[in-house]
Length: 202
Image: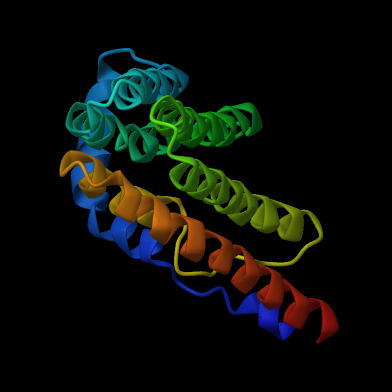
């Protein structure tokens, strides 16, 4: 393995997961004792995002933002539950990854519906660019890892995207988040592409 790939940079998400470990693990253990399956938690999180998207699509940004804030932590919980059970599976990881993508897309879909109804075409284009960035960031990483390379870098991974989007929704300023996500999301994808290029050519 080349030296660049060995240097796996710590992301903000890594630090947050480590900082919250002492909170998430007892909670995950408690939910496990209730007999709830990790995949059930994953799907519950997706259901919450769908409900949030409904409110966003109807212009109730604050309620949508609060719902996302309450259900987004399920993304931390399900993986920890599986690990504590000693049964993390490839299918579980697959389901988690797929629902992550759907969760983001359905919220962006709500925003797109809202701005189409208002005929705000600039905002619609920003939603489109934000979607492109949000999907290309994990795609570049997954494609790199399939080639034995590493691409866990960049300023705006999934957790950071939520940190940008949720407050903007709660304070009813979604357009601010869309500008940030449209620009920095795609910038992050290019950061990862450049990082992979350096590894491939080393």
